[in-house]
Length: 483
Image 1 (cartoon, rainbow, N blue to C red):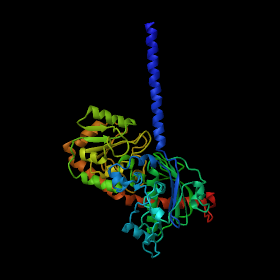
Image 2: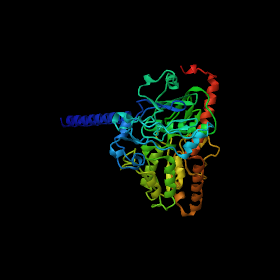
Image 3: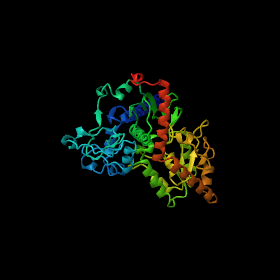
Image 4: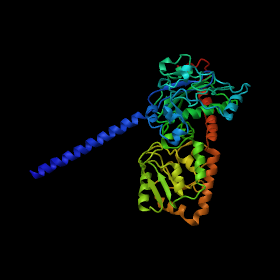
């Protein structure tokens, strides 16, 4: 009898554990679904510019954005006065928030197209537009500035929404003559953008997790401006698919990483607020360079991240076995900048060297460009037996290539030499070699991995891809191939 009771008790315990495990999976999946791009919004700049249709998780992120944190206060100084602040894009939700005044570079971009006009002030907002109200909240799919960019014009010297910007909350409301209405008939998968272009207007439809959609649209907007500065024009095309997931498919034209026809710079070059890399890439890179001019607090290497592949497990094991060589930290919180995070600034301040591994089971690491800027030596772990590097534009398609022992210290993809590499980089005997590697990395990053540099690269790639696609479809003034 006692044995039977013990057996039943053991089975009950196992059953409870299984139920708890299944409940945890449901919670995780529900949480992930809240941050998937599901609601599509569209903005149009009328006569020329970028139209975008992008979805995301504004409401969830907005709840956390009005705390006194750099990502919120840098972009939303009036946030706590009553407006909602969207950290993914950097604007307050009230329609009364002032749009930023265009910079001199933006004004130059508007006049460089040869039309001879200067910056044109937008009409003053109506009383309804100026009144702060939740119903008038600026949709998150905008470029955060509500400015019109076309040949010879830059608008933005006003408060409230720019009157030249049209919004469609419902896809069915898009006018049939709009390029986006034509392009919408094409299928778009998750984490994917569908690009079409006609008469100087680029339409971007699709969605993406977190802030990938908006950041990618901002890169495309800047690339369009760059083309106009050069006097270049995209041909008419549609059906250019842009994979913004961690792994792009071979049948996609553009992608961040993987087998896409053209590899292009990823969204992190605008910002990656969910990972705490903000307010923007260039500002973050400058902060890291400044911090690295001071000696680190600890004579050891550091790594912070989620443990979701074998190399990251090895980092944790090495941290336990050789704590004098490596701190490997699995943070309590994986997004944002609040308590439980270990910012990249903190890591540069603390550690003598930094490690990097592949992102997730099959993804890529978005931190590498900033790590090359950081002024700390980078130990780069090989990604797989077939591909030592992430398959990104800066590892495969730049005229200058990243090289082991020139720009970084390599760790083999199985991690067998991890501890030896830690000893080497921390040894005083190798200080001069380590310093040269670090300086080479910074020079490479300063030349190729800045927002200005990657926008120029994206403009070149977009033009090349568009010409290839236009030649494939043939000239079609009526844009019939998009129906």
